[in-house]
Length: 91
Image 1 (tube, rainbow, N blue to C red):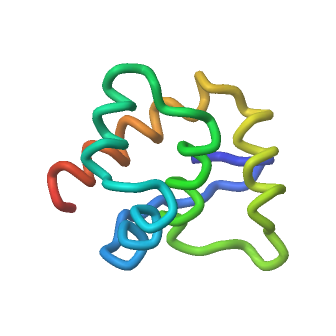
Image 2 (image 1 turned 90 degrees about the horizontal axis):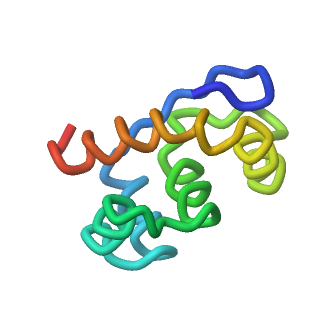
């Protein structure tokens, strides 16, 4: 996904998913909320943050969240869809 002009790769590793689950609660519930259109912006940003393969030096979570927001929900939705598919498929 592109945030603030920078291409970032999301990878749902075991470590990333455990960290996301610790913050957001069970992943199955998160996936269900997403499927029902009830996933909050903060939850989406948190999931993305934990699943970043590499974080550019100096990138803060706040700046990342602002970048995702600036890109709009339409820009973030495809990445969310792919990420959730990977979580469910075990990739």
